[in-house]
Length: 206
Length: 206
DNA sequence: GTCTATAGACTGATAGAC
DNA sequence: GTCTATCAGTCTATAGAC
Image (cartoon, protein in one colour):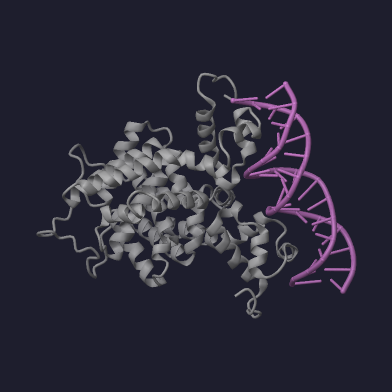
């Protein structure tokens, strides 16, 4: 895996490797030396593509941040609050599934948090984090609602990167996250079938 | 704040400072030099109290881990699954409130994760993480249930350490986390009063 | 584009004086 | 219990050859 993929350009391989190591060891824990070693090149070669470590992190995070900005923008164009929330949730879940490892870092790694905050604040229209929460909880939420939204958003983010769900394919994971997210946020479930069996007269194992 | 608290022993001050800096910068991001500086002593003085950085982290995490082990133990003694879940949730929320900054690290920082895993596996009765999940989702949960539990547990953990809820006093935070947690996990709410107004015309609860 | 070599700062950790 | 001084190792980052 170290060598043998000459058709994929080095910059892409570098970002993939960096993301993997960042999510595995954290931003401070993953050194440029580790990245270079996994890539089969030297540190100097890495520095040819990016001037600083921070720049690598920004490049790793950029696509997800862009998608996030767009989601919030699109959602805020919807007329009803319900539609806003639905669009934001669907978009957020899609983001999570597409960038499974990354979104976990957004909520946890202090270095990434700073990068996110920087990008949020310099985004076209002000603090995105606040706008995101507003989409879900309304403009002046109760403490309980604020906590609920916080739990669901943070929880969804970490669930995407959780090892126990790593073998779920994208569509399956997306569907489940959407269903659970909707239920937890109080949205009606999709028609299909109750997710939880939870009748418990028969089958009380142990 | 650096000096001026001679009555509190240095070891305790050290652990407090370490926890604060760990949660602020992550385990790798917070150096022993930073800890020493905040304490107003030198690195060598820190090394008098702890042989390694890892030992500091273990000492920081120890009380919470102990409490966690006890919660799971107590919960598994309850007879009905509902009582087990209630006890585990109440205990977990109490743990979160008491160690607000710490529990967030448990779910995020790779170094802390390793420490937790180590403690889990050497704990009196096997893998605690699995037993914890079983208490909430049953022995053979559906994917949807597993995801729900994951989201709620991880979400609760990060909510405790979130800056936006930092000014809530312990009792208020505990009550809200409990209520939200119960609701999200499908437990009946406490009698008192609905936290969320959310009847839109006439309370059509789920 | 990738390499060697190196600068300069910082890391965790140790020895030994007070 | 805290200090100074120092270690070996790693870190990010740069210079310059090929």
